[in-house]
Each structure stands twice: as structure tokens, then as C-alpha cells.
Length: 501
Image 1: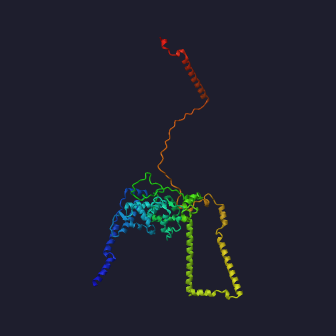
Image 2: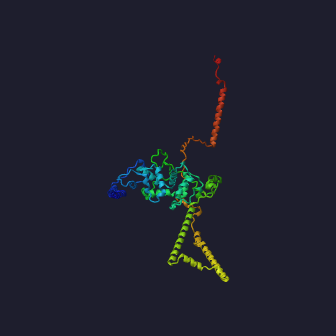
Image 3: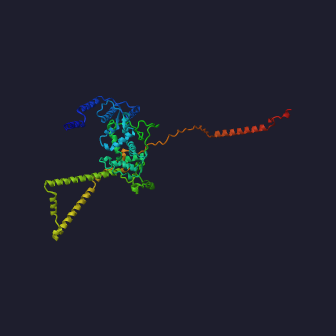
């Protein structure tokens, strides 16, 4: 028994972790690794060309390599590393410091699109991460389109069904992060049943809450690769919206674009009518497209977006909800303060209820004259309260600005640069454009070869030219008559053989 009791503490010491000697060696390895850290590996020519195209310099490469080295040390704390050539994809979420659980599946999907599902080499890390950080909002919408297809394991690759979007964004419903909350978005109230890439991009440009998760992921990576200041001041990116395909994040695709990266063909079928104002037409087509919505009830042809509330209406609802929550909070605080004040006066709730009950006068205990006076007093107090409420309501309805001063100012205002409010573009257009990109359909047509035509000779008609024409005609007529006379004369006839004999 004594030996077993002696062995139990020894086993407990072994289970607690490494000994102090091992801890000392691990700390020494880490310290030595910091001083012995090598320079970043030389990227491939393809990656180097891309780095130059976006303006990455040597100091930026050192910052990115420091992050890459940190990921490797998170993967294995006890290893002594001088130069890092690859890291595991399991440590990539360390790059996201805030709200990691809401965007981690998007990061894993992007790594999967870049063929880095298990391990990311230095070249692939640079290629995938920097390509993702260089995307604009429209390109991010296309990337989210591909991520939803991969995450949902959809059988279609060129469109997403509305119920698939509903299931994907259900994870963000009633999210504590207000910018991620999609509780107000109901895809069953939208008129489209199939969302192609262009339709999905337009939806995300209008309802930006759907774009915020992947936008937060991009900003989290930009802050470390190499910094947010670099991407804010970067002017080396392309000046058009690129088309994001499944091969966009891969280094070795096995194909090339003869005309360069293809542009994204925007249609603006939804944004243009929303911005310029729409008139409901073609009701038969609307019914054909939306009859399955709301359990077969269909949608009313009110807006371009069906019966889905606009983002401005959603913001007003959220503001009203926040105001209601604030009033409820103030009411609870007031009740709590009253309870604390009552406790300070050592009056319990039961005593307060008893006092209130005793203070109430029952009409049955009053005489007829006392009851009549009591009713008159209550009626006068009620009328006085209603008059005060009407007065307060009328004061609130009055405008808080001086109409006379505004009238005078409007009479002398220069209207050259003050356009009417009803012709201005909507506020949501401030962060996105609705102009479609140039569409290149098929191969370029052959160049048209212009056939050379002979120069036209223009004759001027004058009196002298007319006389020349008449003289030329007479001369030609005389020559013809002379030839006829010569042919009829005997001297001109050929001699026969008898005559010769």
C-alpha cells in the first residue's frame, strides 16, 4: 500500500505536463528561433509578377512573412524553425481576431477554392490571400456566390435557388452582431426563385447586410496582410470588375484567357428600376414568376423587390425597436429606483398596497350628495387631463423652425447648384454603381475592307462643249457617209478573174 501511495504522486507529476527542464528548453528554442529566423523564401515567377502588379514591396513581404511564421509557431510551439515553407490550414482562423465563428466557414471555403484545404505553401498563401484581399464589393459578392455553392454542395454551378440562400443565411438570423443580423430578410418575399451571379450581386449591393460577413473577413485579413493602410491607398488594382470563377484563386488552372481577365457582365435589371423609379407592367409574367411564393399565394407587384421591405424601412424598424427597448430600460430603472426608495423608507409593498386600499373611497359608503360631488370632481380632473394632453399634442405637432426665415432664405437662394430633392439619386447609390460594364459577346468581328472605286470624271456642260459635241457628231456622220459612197463606186469593187483574163 505504501508503495502504491508513493507511486500515485509520481504519476500525478507526470500527468501534469512537461518538467521544468523541458519548459526551459522550449523557451530557449523559441527565443533562439526569433533571432535565427531566416528571410522569406523566393516566390515563383508567376507570384512575383502578381505581387509587382499590386504594388507589394520588400517591406510588405517581410510583414506578410512575419504573419506566416507566426502561424507556423502556433501550429507547433516546441519546434525550432528558421525558414517556413508551408503551414497547416487548421491554424488559418488565427488571422481573424473578432467574430471568428461567423466567418470561419467562409475562410475555409476560400482556402478550398485555392487548393489549400489541408496545407498552404508560401506561394499559395500569397496567391490566395492577396487575391482575396484585392477584391472590390461586386467581386466579393461573386466570391460569396461561389462559397454558398460549395458549402451547400449544390448540384448547379451557375445559379442558386432561393431556399438555399434562406438556409445559408439562417445562421445569421437574430445574430447579436447587428451588422450580420438577417432576421428582416425573407427570400420568400423576393420575386426571384433562381439567383444567377449578376442577380445575386445586385441583391447584395442593395441589401448590404448579406455582404457584411465576407466583407468583415476581408478586412480582418487586410489588417494583417500586410496592413489596412496599404489596401486603403492601393491604386495598382484593376479598374474594372473582374469575373470570379472557380479557378480565380488557383495558381495552376490549366487554362488561360487569351484576352486577359474577363470582366463581370452586370445587368442592373433590379438596381436601375429601383433607382430611377418603376412602373408595374407585364403582370402576367410577374404572376408566372411569383405564384409559388408565400405558399402559393403569390406576391403583390409593389416594388422591384416584391414584398420584401427595403433597407431604409428595415433601418426605421430597428431604430423604433431600439427606442422601445430604451424606454423599457428606463421604465425598469425607474421602478427599481422607486422600490429602493421605498425600502429606504422601510415601507414594504404590502404596506403600500394597504395604504392605497385604505385611501380609496368606496361609493357605497358615501351619501348621495358626497357621491355626486365625487363624480363631478373626477369628471373635472379627467377633462383637465384631456385638455393638457391635447395642448401637448398640438405643441408637438407645430414645427420647431421659423417658417418666415425659411421663406425669405428660399426667395434669395441660388438654384444653380441646389437641385430638387425628388430628382436626386437615392442614398444607397453612394456605395455602389449601377452602370453595366461593357459586354463582349463572342469573338471580334472581322475588319471591314473598303473597296477602292475609280474616280468619277465630271464633265462641265458649257456652250462651247455643246458646239464641240455637235461638230464631232457631224464629222462622224460625214465620215460614215463617205465610207458608204466609196463602197458603192465601181472603182472600189474587186476585179473578177474573167476581167483579168
